[in-house]
Amino acid sequence: MATDYFQQFSIQFAGLSDGEHVFEFEIGDQFFASIPNAVVPAGNVSVHVLLNKQPSMISLQFSFTGSVATVCDRCAVTYPFPVEGKERLIIKLGDEPSEDEDLVVLPRGEHEFNIAQYLYEYIALSLPLRLVPCETTGDESICDKATLARLDEYSVSDEATEIDPRWAKLNELKNPK
Image 1: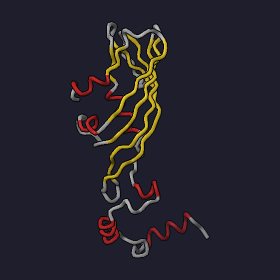
Image 2: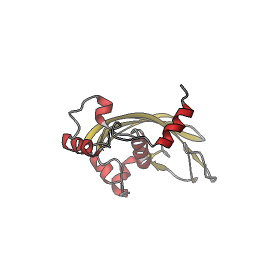
Image 3: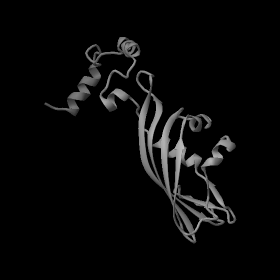
Image 4: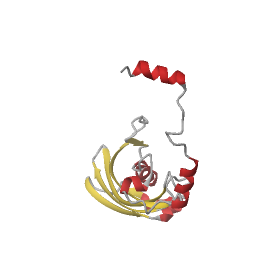
């Protein structure tokens, strides 16, 4: 990651008093473009971070909302997809690493924590596995008609396929009349 750009996502916690503190971040196209091999190429997302500092740990509550550029899995058109979510992360200072993905252990003496990678992961993981906008929104005008026509041209219809007689006999056993 480009460390100079992502420095703005570092939270200095050493000088903060115990209690709650609020941080706001605006994530734009440069954020996503600065991440190598990013699944999300662009977007605009507002992030609200509530930091609760306690003597032995720091709790971070993330909430984000916005939209990111995604590619339709069916017709390959790029379109904005709305994202929103809430996540939580706990930071402790210590010497023993943690296997818990929601707990980060920083070495004693650290005074700041960069949240850029966590922000990207939270946003990317908020996307569904299957991105087909017309199924999500019901608006088929988003899809690329030429690509869909080409897919229909090469797709095999259910009526055209002949069932192998061996499978037909097995299906009779499975579904007796």
